[in-house]
Image (cartoon, rainbow, N blue to C red):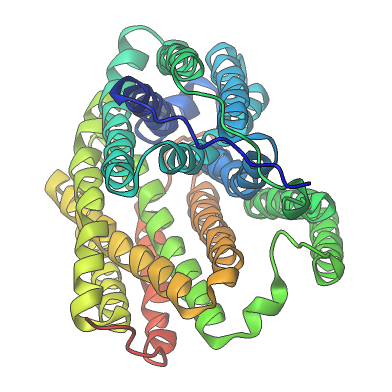
Length: 465
């Protein structure tokens, strides 16, 4: 017997507004750590490597949660999954707000990472309950509000942390997330679940990939202290090898793998993954090193900037990043994706090398951050678009999930490697690394980024319209 489902209930502006408020709140909560990382390092007595680990925990969780959230949305309904996902995020925000030490704060960030799955679920709900023309406008609005929330969090985190405390900079946006979630639950209609047989989840693969990423971060965080604890580093390396081997074996045999490794054999996909990894290594190195350099005292070689000032200095780069995506789309249509990616790689490499040579004035760092943000936006948008359009429609999700995981690994490696460089160059009893460590970090990231040109030149030109 065939069951005919009722057509989806059309939603109004109030429901879209509730999703927009949720996007603002999650964007703000996501962005509070970056401008206040030096402050958190001092208050929680963290090393630079531990600070780098804190800065990426949310991103790692997000990469793991996003594909699962989408499948759960198909199985149980988008609204139901979104509300429960926000319950996890709210719990994480409260844990972060109350955290007395680094381990508890890391736990809070792990839980907060579930927010990365909220935006795709919001888009699914909008498309389900609005006609195509209106849904495009609504998706653009929600996306823009998420970016706006990120800007608000970048600007407000410093003043709140310094004027009240670090606890409140997590608590205030968390309260906003809770309020917006209640509105979403009240205003959005329940959506019918899809077919459960198409929503199988690769739990063993997810668990092994989670363990692999966390262990990799611990290896990079422990590397600067390998001389004092070689057995710990050796044990972590053995564990990492075992997890990677197990994950590859599981993914090869899984009926519905989280990451289809067979897809990597396609030139268009593995080249996209390599380029995404390298680009994100360069970007994350700058995202970590620049706030640390702003924080160095003026009687050394830095600027002694407060958390409020760091947020203000980072804002131009955030604005440029929001403009880079649309610019990349237009440029790719006119000249092809290879031209966009090549230009982005050159721009990023030049920006990183310039920062290694010139970082004695605030405007040097502000302009360098803007160049790198522009280059990253150009490249990542072009790579995701190119990957999505270079495979069969049925393989789009698998291919883009590979790029997503690669992006997270690139960000994690870049941040942790930069933190390790600064930690290794910090004299005993001091909290200030040698200036040469920043030069080394920027030059290393620049050299790695420039090496991506070897892969970019082998790309097809891409679609031009």
